Structure formats: structure tokens, C-alpha cells
Image (cartoon, rainbow, N blue to C red; front, top):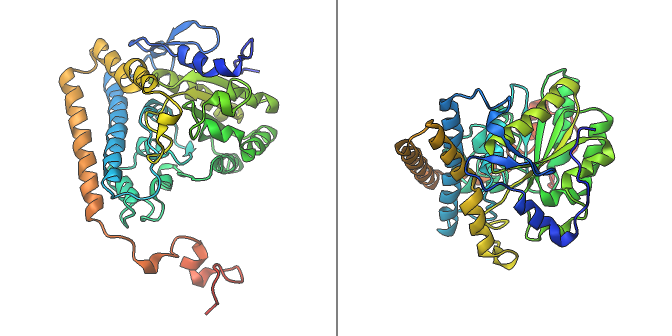
Length: 389
């Protein structure tokens, strides 16, 4: 087994403290190994050491754009333009951007309801995403999905799912399809720490190992599930160790270091591409906002804890300082990138506001293929609870 194992199991009250202390505070992004405490500079690992300065700046720009989009969407929510739930990705940007940056042609992504960061990382644009949040026809899901249901099949991005853990068997199915069609690819299936306690996740792990499927389960562990500390909602540490029961390789890594994320995902992709084997990756990260905008997170964590992470482990700040030190970016470029991201985010809100709502007559469109193509219908009976015409 290639998985990383702890020598001892910590007491529940120690678990969150351990993970917080294991995250490096170095602005050089030299990460502390989650197991043995050694320090490693992931910028010098195989997948990162030959990156051009231009490419690194592009990674930084992607993270900035995700954050500015999220901040603008929060304003729109507070102004009453967005209804329902809004799950923000602020603080976790390095996980999505780092993961997507190492994908190949036949690699796919599926995720849960906190999906804005992944959507923008794969190349979806601000306008289609903001319009979807507004429930407008110009949105990526024609205004019918909202925050939790961004989709871009043309970019190998399959959502955006509101049921906790519900995407795990779907990710398994994508991996099955890749193997069935003899394509050298993998499915990255993202989830939160709370989803690891859902039954479908374990059913999926069983089949992934039994059938040797190239699925990579990525636990974005931001520590609090929907509002309960991991030490109170999950027995056993780390969460990724649950792959052991199914003979699946697992690892634990830091999510504030984009270089470490890239290396972690690259290693799992090699396992999936070359040996068609699954992985369970636990990436320790942190969300600055509540579970959703409607969640007053003051009830389960302190403001001091949030500020400490922002000050010492913010993925954008750490990467910016690294790029400045390497002389791959200037302070003026930093300002220009930030200004453009804010401007594009504001423009997307104006686009969404000006866009039309879906026509009520389109309510049943895009639900079942056969209802949109009645002449090619092959099944019998009715698709909806209505009297057949």
C-alpha cells in the first residue's frame, strides 16, 4: 500500500488542532509533511520545477478571478438578486486551480454544491456563471440550476450536485465509462469532509477498487462539514484512511500550497492513467465563509481562527509572495490582475441583471431527452405526473 499512515490515532479533541498546526506558515510555501513533520518545497518537485513564470502568473490570476467572482456574488446575494443557497469557495481556490492545471484531455471533474471555483477553473466564464446564480436564461444551466448546478460538458465538467455525497457514484460511473471506452483518463470527484460519512461513498469505493476504476476521490476538508467540527462528526483520523478498507491508496496534503496540490493530483493521475487504480486524497483547506451565505458561522468557530488562517495560510497571499520573490510578477501586475478581475466580476453582474428569465413554457425542457425529441422517443408511458395528451 502506498497510502500514508499515522502511527497513532489522536483523541477527538486533538484532531482539528493537529491539522491546524500541521499547515506551514512560511510565505515560501514550504509545506510541512502531514505525517512525519518534515518540510518540503513542492515548487521543486517534478511536476512544478519547470513551470514558466508566465504559467505561474496564470495560475495566480485564476485564483484571484475565483475570489473576486465569489465576493461579487456575495454582494449580489445581499442585494437580493440571488435566491436560494450560495456556497462560497473563498479560501479554497488553490485546490480547484491546482487540480485542474494538471489534467489531460480525457480527465473529467464532478463535484458537490460548492462548485463555483471548479467551474471557473475549467474555463467557464463569469457571465454564464453569474447569470445562473441570478436564475437567468443566459446562465450555464439556463437559469434552472442556480448556485449548486453549474455544468459544462464541453469542458469535461459534470457539476455541481446538491445531494451530499450524491456525486460519488456518478464520478464512479464516469470512470467506468472511460475504462469501458479504452480512454486513458480519470474522473476527479470532489467532496467535502461531511460527505465521507454518506453510504454511497463507501459503495463507490468498493466498486472502484473491485473493478479497478480510474476515479480519484478528493476530500476538500475545510474542517467543519455543514457547521460541525470534524472531531465531532467523524471517528478516525485522517478521513482518507477510510480507503484502506477497500485497498485503495490514500494521502493527506495541504490545500493552501498550489504546488503541493499539483503534485498530489499528478501522482494520483499517474496511478489512474497507468494502472487504472482509484485514490482517496484528503486535502486540508479552509473556507472563510459559512457553509452557505445563510449560515451564521459564528456559532461554531471564532473570528480569531478565521483571521489567523487569512493572515498566515491564505493561498492567494502565499503564492503572490512566492511569485514576487522569484521575480515572476511585479506589484504593478498584481494590481492589474486584481483590478481586471473585479471589473469582470462587476460586468458579469450587470450582464446577469440585464438578462431575461427563462420562459415558463420552457420549464420541462432539458429534463428528459425524449421529451425534447418526441419523434425519437422509444420508451412508453408518461414522463411526468400529468394526463397524456
